Length: 196
Image (cartoon, rainbow, N blue to C red; front, side, top):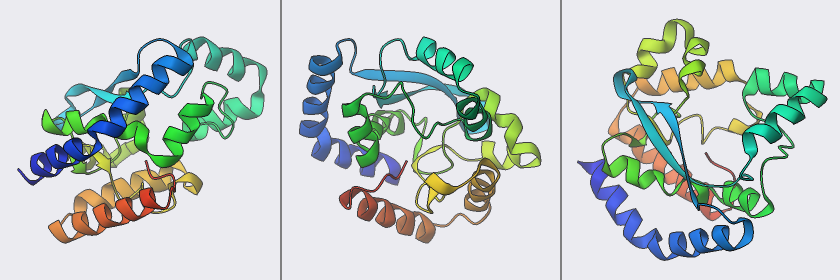
């Protein structure tokens, strides 16, 4: 219930920003402003996770070509599932990611009961194998808009540490820890630090 109240309140406050962002995405890159991708939810149930589109429209082809031509990028992708210099991300998309504004549409996922305000990071199904014996722990919680991993220097964190932080969050969950994570997230967003 607290998730719904927080998400609804945040959505009301963020609505003007979200409308402007959607319009700017349409004007600068064409195509849809929103993007959804299947993620693994509570107890393994898949759901469409919403975000503002921060990449070029043909991002899958751009990624394949880039990984085929750059062995270092292919290594980064295999290790972290992210790239230091991702050619798919638009300039405006980079700003949205840096400010975490690209994540605001996930407030709708929270209202639908698919996500929580705080929880483990939403992952795609083929990432579950990387959770090893911690997968049941991961699936025991709803994915979060923010979480322990996101507020603890995630940009420099490897995947094994991410799994450990997600598992620690689920294992040690409390209302107090959620409040601390939410406060740290708000502070980081206001400082324009990348959070999620």
